[in-house]
Length: 322
Length: 302
Image (cartoon, rainbow over all chains, first blue to last red; front, top):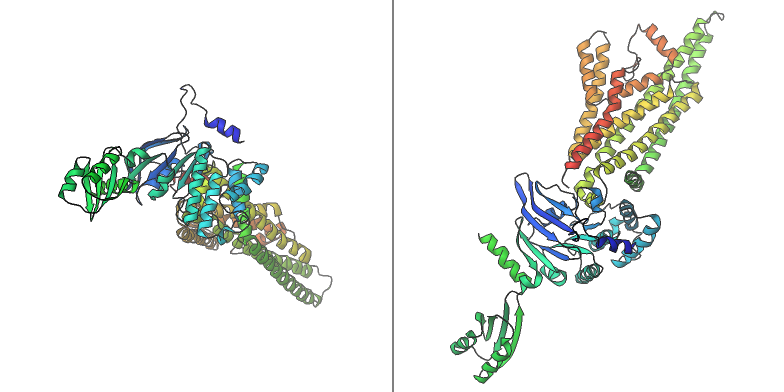
C-alpha cells in the first residue's frame, strides 16, 4: 500500500517528465457577496514540500484551503491539486484535511467516524481494521476510539481530526490551524507529526497565524493579507535577510557608537545594549577585539536573527498603513 | 458505492440519535391503541346492530340483515381510513422533519466539511441521505399500515380494495414530503426550512379540503381548480386521497356512489381514484426535487 503510494508520488506528468506540483493556485478570486475574501492568489507548492500559509485572522487562508478541497468555488482563477481540479471527487483521493473548526458528527464514536471516512476514501475492511488503531495511536488517542465524539474534549477532537486527515495515507495534507485547541505538549506533537510526514515525502499545506509553529516546520512560506500574497519564499530568505548583533557593554557613549558604526548600522540602543545590523556574522570577532582594545568591557555579543514574527508584523503593518 | 456508504451512515445516525427507538415505541403504542379502539368499537356496534335486527318482527326479511352488514362495512371503513390517515400524517411529518434535518444542520455545524473533502461527490452524498431516509420511512409506512389493515381484517374481516396500491401511494406521499424538505435543506438554514416546509404541508392539506368543499355541491369548479393548483405545489394530500380510494372495499365504493348519488363520502378520503396526470406529477415530483437539490448543492460554498 505504502509502496504504491510512494510510487504515485514520484509519478511525473505524462509527456513533460516534470513532477506534478501538489498544489497550484492561479489568480484565485473569491467574493462572498460584496466581501472579497481572495483578490488574486497565486501560489504553487511542490510535491514533498512543507508549505506555511501565514496571515492574520480573516486574511483568506481558510477560503483558499477550501477552494483547494472543492468545498468553495472560486469566482475567478483556478486551482489544481496534483494536476486536477479539486471539484472532481477523484482529485481528492490523495488529500487529507483537518478543518479549522474540526466539527464532526458528535453522535458517532471516534472509531465509527474513522470507519466512515475510511470507506469514503476507498479503504477495504482489512485495511481499516489495521489503520484505524494505528492513526488513533499516532495522534495520542489510543484506547479512546470507542467513546462518542460528544464526550471528547476540544483537544481530543482536534487530535481526532488529525487522525482523519492521516487515515488514508494521503500524499497531500491540508491542516487549517492544526494546533488551535492543543496545549504545548500537543503543539509539539503536531510539529513532530508534520516533520514525520515530510520525511515520508508527504506534502503539507499548513494554515496558521502562529509564527513559531510555521517557523519550526515549514520549508517555504507565503504571507497573505487581505486576500493577497504579500511575501513568499524560503523561510531563511524571509526571516534571515538581515542579521543583527546584540552587544552588551559596561557603557554606551558617542565614541562607541562611532566605533560600532563602522561595522554596521545601529538599530537601537537600550541602556547599555546596542543592536547592530550587519551584513554578515563574520564581523563579530573583529568587532569584539576592537571594542576590548578600546577599553570597553564586553559582557555579551549575540547574533540575533530576525524572527518571522518581525517580518510578518512589518509586512502586515505596511499593508495596513497604505 | 459511496451512495451506500452514506446511506449506511445515515441509518447509523438514526439509530444513534434514538430516532429508530422512538419511532418503534410510538408506533407500537399507536398500533396498540388503534387495535384496542377498533376492536371495542366494532364489537359494540356489531352487537347493537344485530340486537336491533333481531327485534325486527319479520325474520324472513333479508333486507335488514344486508343493511346491518353494510353498515358494519361502512363503520370499519371509516375507522380504517381514519387510522391510516393518522399513519400517513405521522409518516409525512416524520419525513418532513427528517428531510429538514438531513443536510443543513451538518452544513451549519461544519461537520460536512471533512466529509465532502473526501472523494465523495455531492450527488452521491444527497442520494445516500435520501435513499436511507426514504427506506426507513417506507418501512415505517409498511409496518404501520400493515398492522392496521391486519387488525381490521382479523377483527372485522375487512378487505381493502387494493392493499399494494394503497400502501404504495402512502409511501409515495412520504417520499414527496421528504424530497421537498431535503431540497429545502440544501438551500435554507434549518429553522427557516422547517417553517417553510410546515407551511407548505399545511397548505397542501388545506388544498385538499378546498377541493373537497368544491365537490360538496358538485360543479364548484373554481374551488376544485384552486385545490388542484395547491396540490401541484406539494402533491402530498392528493396522493393520500388517491391511497384512501384503494383502502376502501369495492363493494362500499359502489354502494356509497349509489346511496349518495356520487357524493363525496368522507372529507379526508376520496371515493374516486387519483387522476392519472396527478399521479404522474406525484411520481415525477420527488425526482425533480432531488435533481434541483443536487443542482443547487453542487454550487453551494461550504
